[in-house]
Length: 159
Ligand code: SME
Image 1 (cartoon, rainbow, N blue to C red):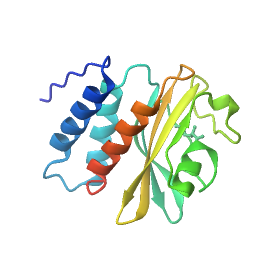
Image 2 (tube, rainbow, N blue to C red):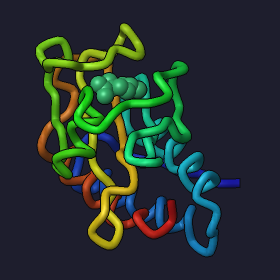
Image 3 (tube, rainbow, N blue to C red):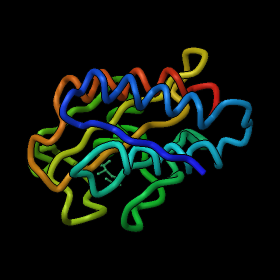
Image 4 (tube, rainbow, N blue to C red):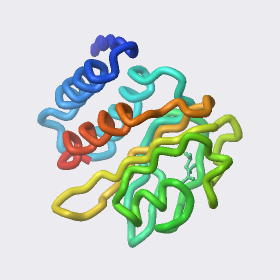
């Protein structure tokens, strides 16, 4: 049994603890689906005020839904489309304060109001994105972006 506890008050500590918990979860496990499933669940318990935490993977040049916690979501997203496609195409983190102000945002869950999407890069290639949605406008800040980017580096070889 895993027993994680996170303190959301101090983001640098939260993300250090999250990276450490992620390392523990993926250690010695080569199955990418199992690892993404556990990581999506870990994100859901570690990060307050999120209604969707999970992965889209690059498959045949587009994004395909991966393991997540949240409501059922759109399965395929073209590169450059929506927040996830923008992150994958640009290889840049997308920190979106208000999704309704993001041109082309794809509304999978009407409750989502802000979003953070971080590309996962392995051997120089984007292989997936980590997608976090919140029902609160402005939920994510630069500290969240840095923390999830660090997580993406930790898990890149395990998904
Ligand atoms: N909002 C995303 C789509 C995925 S859902 O948030 C789970 C986007 O615009 O790419």
